[in-house]
Image (cartoon, rainbow, N blue to C red; front, top):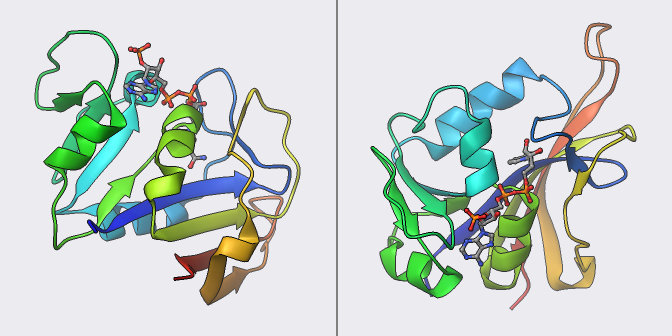
Length: 163
Ligand SMILES: NC(=O)c1ccc[n+]([C@@H]2O[C@H](COP(=O)([O-])OP(=O)(O)OC[C@H]3O[C@@H](n4cnc5c(N)ncnc54)[C@H](OP(=O)(O)O)[C@@H]3O)[C@@H](O)[C@H]2O)c1
């Protein structure tokens, strides 16, 4: 099985985005996202691709999911989950980086979840699909407490799929 990891930042109420934007700015989390994904394949939906200020994300193989027959400079395009998986690496982690439609499509295939949990509810129009935590085992957790500038605490939690 190819290694497929979902990486996402989720609010307490499962919110992940609004008006095709992220809901918060956590510089340390963005740095961590870059250091974890650099050198790997990353997979995103067309809306997330459109939301990026600078695209493609450098130093990574960007796969953009769309049902349209288009080409995107500097990116690979996949028209289905099955087609994307054929493009995946067999030995290095392949990262699913959002948004909601793409998380939902790949969740059944993922064997690892890298969650940044934001301990607050956010008003949003886009939500992460419900996770059945009986299928997942927590293997790592780091908690960060608000020092005043963010307005919320957050945690990095890693889950692997139970066999
Ligand atoms: N918090 C986080 O960690 C995080 C991470 C990433 C994104 N986000 C947020 O999530 C929101 C965007 O999510 P979204 O759900 O609206 O959009 P999305 O998942 O980024 O993209 C949806 C698009 O992907 C294509 N698509 C979906 N399923 C497909 C499939 N099975 N095969 C081929 N193509 C497929 C379609 O493109 P076409 O219409 O072109 O066919 C669809 O319109 C934004 O607010 C963004 O900021 C949050």
